[in-house]
Image (cartoon, rainbow, N blue to C red):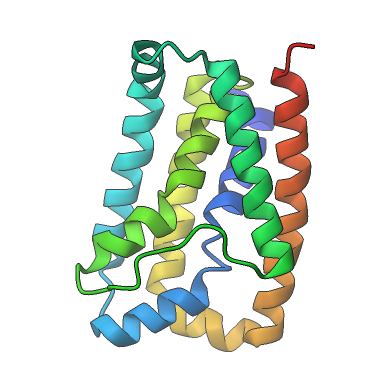
Amino acid sequence: MFSIDQILAITFTLFAVIDIVGSIPVLVSLKEKLGHIDAGKATLASGFLMILFLLVGEPFLKLLSVDVHSFAVAGSIVIFVIGLEMILGLEFFKTDPDAKAGSVVPIAFPLIAGSGTLTTIMSLKANFGQYNILAGICLNLVIIYLVLRSLNYIERMLGKAGLMVLRKFFGVILLAIAVKIFKSNINL
């Protein structure tokens, strides 16, 4: 049922896709615009979206006549593009610059639980057990909450260069994960 190896792999994969550490500069900017980020509200909203997609994503795909393996291949391409974004510093996926909606939009969605995260959750279902994915999501929610609560401290501690190095490192990891998901779900 529960596998520590699977949970760690899922947690690391979601951590890389969510890229909460790489999002710190964006989060700091939003905090300045909003005046305050409600860490609890943003964490709960993003967790709700991720768990909802974990539970009803597959039936929704069946309704559209799309199998999980095809979705996983498509998801691996999205993950690959996100990895390229992180490494090359390009922006393929645009976020809504209007931050007036508060902690839920754009922080919980699409910044934390955006298309990349939801696609990754569905892609992970092709290779990992649902309970392990749920555990990985929960571990990431704890990390997200802690990062949101300590934005100022983390920014001072890592500095701009440290944040850039982390972003590039997790970009390379995402590329490797994307290739693995693609390879394990393609039927040649």
